[in-house]
View 1 (cartoon, rainbow, N blue to C red):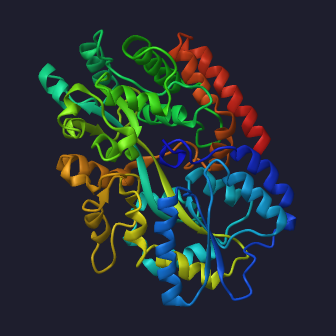
View 2: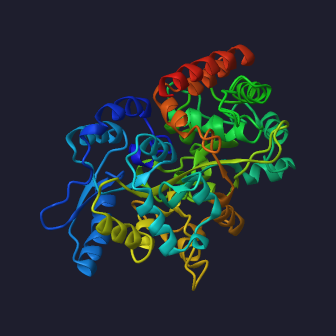
View 3: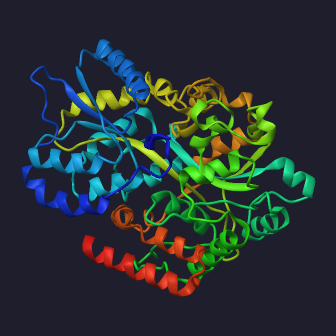
Length: 465
């Protein structure tokens, strides 16, 4: 599966960017405009079909505005290094699209953003046309750092047919998840499968999703690392127990987790919304292979429920992990052209952009002043898939689609609200949390593992402070 479809590929080597960008800022002239007044736009999409679809949107903008655009697709695993090189050469783009929350904070920490231009776009579009949570997560104090565009969500998926047959409640809490895993776990069926591979952002994201609902935070309001807090120890212990006693053997990554569920070998799994089209049998190289899927490739989609927010025993309320990706304007860019382009991508070009991958681009600009739900209403009817295309509504129950629509409003992320977004970005390079998850999943004691991970995060924090 290409990395651009993985939930884990959005923020790697941010520590290197944080360290290097500061050294090259003096050389930055930013957004080196073409002689004809054009702009350069980077997008973190490099699959040919997505680049082609984006180019069509860009061509429409150029036709309407007269502003030439050089579109540069950037691979997710190359983004930070290319950004460092461009900054050193004084050749930064004018606009960057598909920017993750940690990347937004790293760009901001290195003073690479034109926050006034970003604020102008948001004000023109209308703050009340966005989900409030998306604006909060892309804001630092009073400064709007990026224009939030879409989100993908981390979800707990479960077999509704198996749960109903066993008389089990939906797995919305630690207790319910563990009870279901114990009840459904057999020689042929794992109660749960989740990521455990060390050094993998997908493992960190999966655990953060589980941990947030237990009140486990990376740092507290004062910026002190709290990964070794009782709430985090409890979350690690819960996940370790779940995996050791009720999962499949071996380290699990983004591909093997999906494969187990698709083969009908797991009752629950955690993955992003990018799996929805594949689960419906719309992608030939990632088809469900369960026994029932031979006659009905959409069997799993029709018999899968989703849990957005998980509730832990020490948490105040259920919490939801996800990512918001944004458009942002680079400092010293062709401001007028950049602002016009981003406004186009959030208006006339918005649904075409969302349509590139609706399963992983849930709109966070929900509508317009005239039609407050225009974009979310249209999103549910957009065709998804690769080799076969059809709307999500053809396969998933209305309550699933409603959960996806509402999900962005309840997103939480470690460190952002505590003003430590640069730390979140920096941890993506070393992945101490993924290492801790792998260790407890292999039998290590949760408290000592949490303490080791916390010390690693503290060391990273010192390096970026």
